Amino acid sequence: MIIVATPSRRSLSFASLLAAFVVACTPPPYDDQTDKAISTLQSDVDTEIVSLLSFAHTASAGGSGASDAKTKGGYQANKTFYQKVDVELMSIKLRVDAAPSVSTSQMDKALEALRQNILSGPGSLQSVHQQEDLPGEAYFTTERTILAQQFQALLTYELLLKNGSASTNNTTTGTTPTPASAKK
Image 1 (cartoon, rainbow, N blue to C red):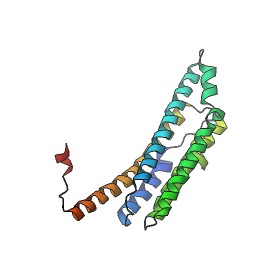
Image 2: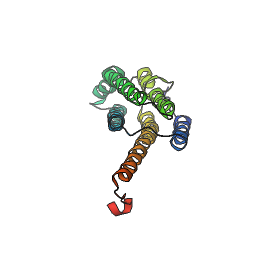
Image 3: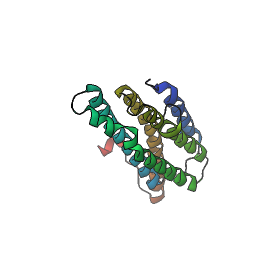
Image 4: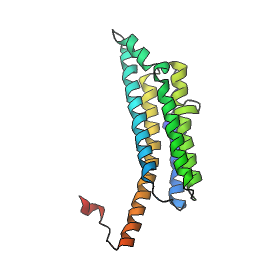
């Protein structure tokens, strides 16, 4: 049985939660390491999903490479990926929690929602991969869309913090911020 998570089921509630905290909360100071860690995690997850998509495609097409694709794309061959993601998510959470602010609890909720979708929730990437060994292309495509929306929200928040820090720094140093249109 193929389990397909719909973007509306998981990502829309996450997006509204994150939007609420971006608007309503006093942001913490920008942390370059947190920003880079989120970007690295996003790249790692997307790279893995693209690889799994390729294996799923090859396996479903049959032919001489199908058996090898099923083995390389199977859960056991990719188990260390999930362990690495678990470590990376914990590292990001610890960095966020190290500089507590009004928005820390909301950021923790956003990171937990991401953890649920990748590692531990029903229908998560890991649980479906483990159950089906190599889910089909449709599942991986849908999961990639859902996770991209979550990462986009986290990265947007980090960019807001960065731009807010830049505005504060410009005011402090007496420089005038350059409009985005003038930077092109």
